Structures are given as structure tokens and as C-alpha cells.
Image (tube, rainbow, N blue to C red; front, side, top):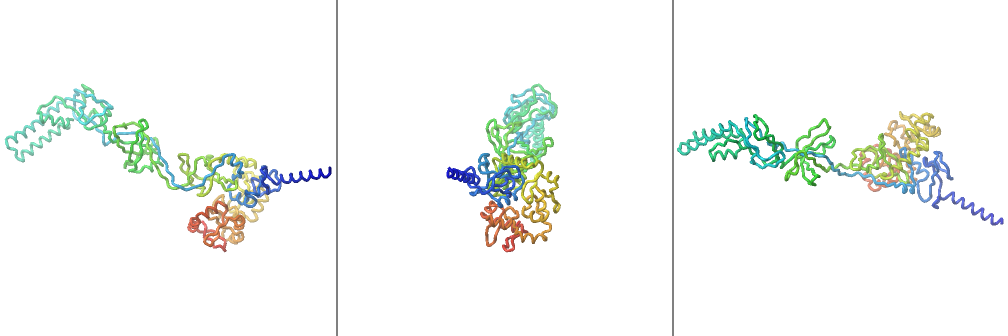
Length: 558
């Protein structure tokens, strides 16, 4: 019985010890870390100082120890670490950031109008009595020389008699063979004067020719259409007495039309004179091609838009004045960083994305955006090509970040402790006196121990954090040259962050190129450099002014 009990106790102890060093999936656990501060390690599971469960670090992968601490210290506040299992569960999907040209179709509403150069108004030049009105009414298609109305005017009889007398004089001179050049010039001038008098009364050329052939004066003048077109309005009625200057008909030649499109001021620059656009009349599913006029657009103060004029051919008079059409203009933008709109979290006060830093770390980064259209948004500042950003599941990452902040009691604005890398509530740190002023800037700490370490040598810890929270403090560089040489600080040629040489060598984040050594803050920067080293070396030479190890003679970094 004693032997059996001893064997059972040994087996139980071994199983317990094995379960304490292995995860639920059988992988070997090296140690446990605080999810909010990977620098805090423990051999046993439990509750971390931040109040959250300790996370295991496995022997077969994952960021551990000093690497995790350095990586977290280089990231902004609000960053989180998500295990691969949890990433798969919440549907995290990432994409590579690229700078590429984009195409956009600018869609605007257009209104059809008549071409002012093809409008014909029929007015009375004398007092007339309208005896007859022909069938064409408003909206009718009329042909050239088609009769519109007939009117009587005493002035027409006088002008017609003068015209016939001038013609008879020409005939008499020709028949008597007395048509000397001087006489013919006088009689021809009389004929032209009589013709102009008739034209001024609205007599058409066709009726003047008929009058010359028949030599009989009609008791009415027939007004005919001057062109093929669309009858926009008719005010003439039978038996009407019209005064001088009365508009009787308005005819528009619709073989060519104008289209007015209202654009915002920032969009009007894409419509340059001569550019061809696509015009669609959706009711009949007809498509036309229009050209931007050379006339400057005029500004409408009521709608605060610019009205641009387009010119188009209108076969079959399909488009009529007052109709609405869709105008499409393909616009090509210069290369830029463009992301799906869902990848950017917009709180109103700031816009953020989550950058995948590898090994389950996701950095929350503030960005500046430009145009937003068709489900895409332009990134002006905050990202560089080659980085990986979260395009799906970022809402859950944001929730995780806020939950971790709430677990640590953070309610207000967040800052990063320059010593341990933990997130600190600025209001609480200020109330507890755990703040320090250095070179006009305020730094916040999670404990008195961190504050005391910072106060002893603030320059050392600021250089290690890389100054990611703002512009780098360049004052007093002469006093810090000795410190830089001792700590062996280098600039990452990709992101420009400060890198500790010892840490970079220990983690293997170094590259040799043309006999020179380059150091990187992350594996992604190293991989990006190894693909195209010449590209980033050229950028560094243009920028200049880096700190490099004296023995490597590295080229200046930007």
C-alpha cells in the first residue's frame, strides 16, 4: 500500500507540474506576462498588476521578454495584443499599405438648355393685324420656311408698291436699251432699298421672290420659320392686333444643345475646357458625348456652386430644354495612400487605424485623411507604404483597447510612461504628483519608482522611447553626443525611429549593405529595407543629419 501511494503521489505531482508549464493545447509555456506591460514576467499564472489575467508565452513562438517590451514601448497608447485564436474568432483581416494612383467617376446632375446662338425670335417691326395662324403650336417641330402666320399691314402695301416700281424701272431700261451703268446703279439701289423695307416688315425671301415673279401684291404677309427647330413658345392668335416689338414666336434649333452642371468649388477644377464627358438620359437609356465649353463657369451665391456649361450634339431632338441628365466624368488622381473607409475609425475628434506590428501586437495610430468617396479614403499623414493595417475587425480591436484602458482605471487622456511603457491616465497622474517637466514638456508616470528613474537621467529614456509622441527634441545635442555613443543609438532607415544597437543585434534586426550596417526597430522595417535598400538609402542621403555608430560610418538618416 505504501508503494502504491508513493507511485500515485509521484504521478500526481508530475502531472500537476506538467500542467503548470503547458498550455491548454499542450504547448510548453516559458513564463507569463502582463498583457498591459510585457516587461512584467512571472513563472506562475495569476492576476497581473493591471487587474487582467496573465498571458502565457510559449516556447514555439510569440513575442517574449525584452523584445515585447521594446516593441510595446515603440507603439502609441491604445495599442493591444491579440492572440491568433482570438484574431480568427473576431475576424481580423489586414492589408498592405500601398501608394497608388486611383480613378474616380465624378457623377453630377445636368440640366438641358437651348443653345443661345441657335435661338430665333419672331417679332413685329410694325403694327399688324393677324389674319391667320397656321397649325404649329408650342412644342411642335417646325421646318425651315414652314408658314406660321399671315398678317395685314398698311406699311406692307407701300413697301411692296415701291419694290414693284423699282423692278418695272429696271425692265424699261433694259427693254429700251438705255441701261447705262449710272442708271443701272441707281435703279439697283432702289431695288435693294425696297427689298430691305420688305424684310424689315417680316416678309420672307420666298415671298419676295414670289412677288417679283407674279408682280401682284398680296393683301397679307406670310411669316415663315427661319430654321428647322423646336417651337418653344407662341403668342400669336387669329384676329390679334399686335403692336411694334411684340414677340410672336420663339424657335430653337435643338440640333446642338447646352447642358448646365452645378459643381462644388473643389470639384470644378476637374472640368477643364475641351474635356469630353459622358451624358446619360436614363429615361430612354440614351448616351451622349459632351464637351466642356471654354466659357468660364459662373458662381451661384444661393447654392454656393459653380455652374459649368457643356456642349453636345442632339440627334433626333431627344433632349429638350428643361430635361435632367446624368453627367459622368472619369477623374484620375495622383498616387496616394488609399484605404477602405471601414479601416478608419472616426470618433469626430480624431481618426485612427490599427497597424499590425507582428506577433499579435496592433498599434493604434492617429491619421489625417483627405478625400472620401466610393467607400475609400485618402490618408495624408500617419502611414507609410509597406505597413500592414487592419481592414476588418478593427471595431473589436478598438473595443479591446477601451476595455483594457477601463481595466486600468484610465478615464481621461492617455499618455505612455517613458520608463515601463504602460498607459497612464494624465488626470490621475497629475493628481498624485507623478509627473515631470523636461525641456518644456510634461511626462506622466504610473508609479513613483518610474518617476524617480526618469528624473535621474531623462535623456536616456527619451532616446529609448524614440520620441514617437511628437517632434524630436533637438536642443542640447552637443551635450548628448557622449550619451548617444555610450548607448549606441541609431536611426531606423525606414520609419526614422531611434534604435538601440545592442537590442537590434540581439533580436537579429540588422542588415548589411555595401559594407555598412543598418539597424531596425521591427522585423517589418528590416524586411522592407531588404527588398529595396537603394530606395531608402537615397532618401536618407537627401535628408541628412542622423546619428550613426562611429565604427559603421552609416550614411546620414532622415
